Length: 85
Image (cartoon, rainbow, N blue to C red; front, side, top):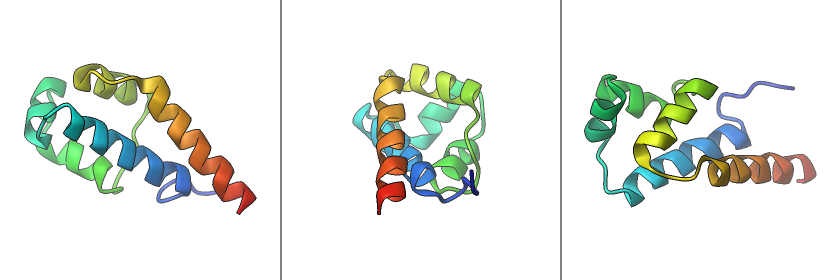
């Protein structure tokens, strides 16, 4: 396994989490408040400056109200496509 920061899977995760937040009608600040974290926490994982740990991922999708399994499927598909391409 190579580096994961800015890998196809990481980019897919960033995109999917940001889109889920936008679909839920939440700003970064609103989501950060729900997570009891600073707005910069959300900005950094959405912009690819930091990774999201599994426990953080579970909390994020819970507060957004989205299906974490769909996001994981998108990340897996991106990784698979990168391996083929």
